[in-house]
Length: 400
Image 1 (cartoon, rainbow, N blue to C red):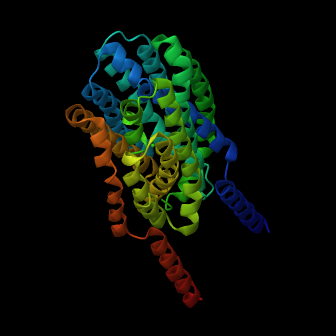
Image 2 (image 1 turned 45 degrees about the vertical axis):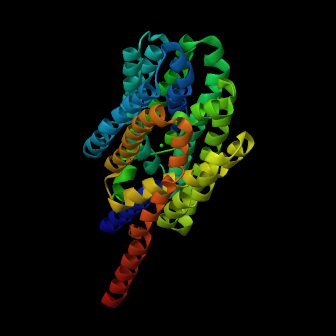
Image 3 (image 1 turned 180 degrees about the vertical axis):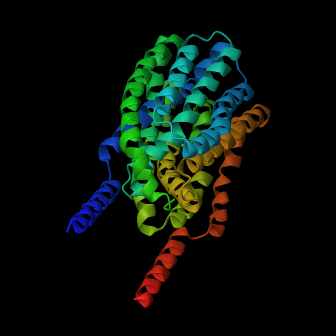
């Protein structure tokens, strides 16, 4: 009788643990998404300030590209290392520590008096990003309850909304008040640090245990366009800096919506198909973009943002399913590779724009979505998982 009670108690504990692990924790998802919003809002201030910095410091397009390269390559070099290290030795409070780097970088950006100090500020902000993105992506998976695409969409849409807010804040706060007004955004960094400390408490007490049972399960983001989009509008259509920032906000707002719908679509139809359709499907619109007037340029950026952004959460979850149990390493490698390639691309495009003009650069970039054809060679992860489940079920039935 006693042994039976022990078995029942252990079974109840196991069921309770499984139920807890399988429940989607929307409060944590909301918190990490909001912190992603604050993080990327602060980071987006740097490219949003490019027109002002170019004029104030008499920078070339090549130097603008070097700023982008410094920010993104810092994240690229550190993110895979941080993600792999966190897989072996989780650090629940590293998110708050990473945001501290961003805070210091913002303050330096506000008061930098030379180009080398701008580069240092970009490197510090990039370091903050390198810590935040792989670990926060891990937290989103911990809180997903198995709805990995939905969780990644909620997580990433926060970052996209923050990136979209950056140009508006630059247009209506920083540009009228000057570079030093960037320091006010340190308040957002302090708020994020407070929230991330609390997320760290949940991570330590519940999150690690949630990730372990699912170990077998397994934002080149839109920055590539945003780095030079405002310059393109100013150069071709002779709009004001403030007007260019508003057009950038329209594009980034569409990116945010596309990110929100991409994850659930990947859960429903398969991530490979969403990746393929989103990258290649944007080609007709990018081919039209360099030849459109100002109105149609704004109109075309909406479907471009919506379609191409839908791939972001699908790509991250797809990569995590290819390497199950290495959530941090995969997130770090994905975001790091994307940032690094984007940084290299920004530096090359900046140099190219100095040589042949930014309008011609945009005509060349219109063909880049053809890279989406390579998605045809990706393995179908979901089909393999379903086949393995069927085989396991058949084996279990025959053994009975």
